Amino acid sequence: MKKAFLIFFSLVLLGFISHKSKILFQINTLKKAGFYQKLENQSVFSIAKYAYSKQSYRGILYSVLFSPSRNELVILDSTKYTDIYPEVLAYEGANFYANLVHRFSLLSDGKFNPTQIKEDWKTKEGPLDLTYVSNGELEVLNPNTKKDWLDQDIVHHLKLELEKAGVRLKKLNQSDGALLRIKPKEQEILEKKFDWSFE
Image (cartoon, rainbow, N blue to C red; front, side):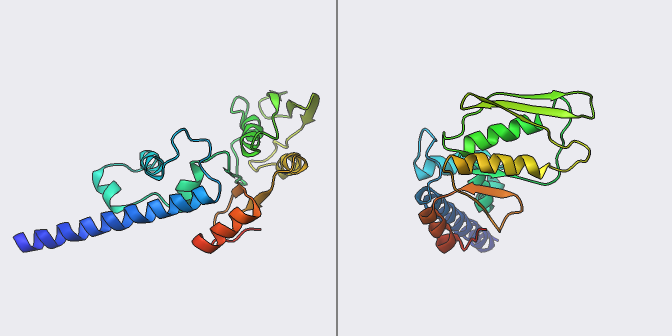
């Protein structure tokens, strides 16, 4: 019985060490690729601790056996990552499209700074005016609210705003809706170390 417990404990310990070294490697790779620049304390260990605190499942055993995935690590940095999923919950009061503009602002590295972002619903079902001010100009957009699908024209408009500001965005093929602000050298690091591909 004692021997079996020691074998079990040794396996758990090996798993713990393996998971911890793996997550530290992944965080270090992401740091080299420009992630986590805005976090107050940028040490690999503090970022790992923060990542564990954000896991959807918690507990000592879970933390020992499982590390946050690469996608969970990338999601921690909203200045480098956002997700664009086709199905949305856009309704009056949800501010979905206003939040989308804000997320692109975070992703822009300070180069796209919209202010006075507002959604004005004419009725509960739409139509909808999405407005914001950028570089002193009022932008008025009209997202399609007839279906529960993201209006890709709005996404295209926001991508163009960042492109005009010199921000390079790439879609991560390994995740359905992941969009990353990434420089060519940073992209090379992730392609080499993580075997990721971008379009």
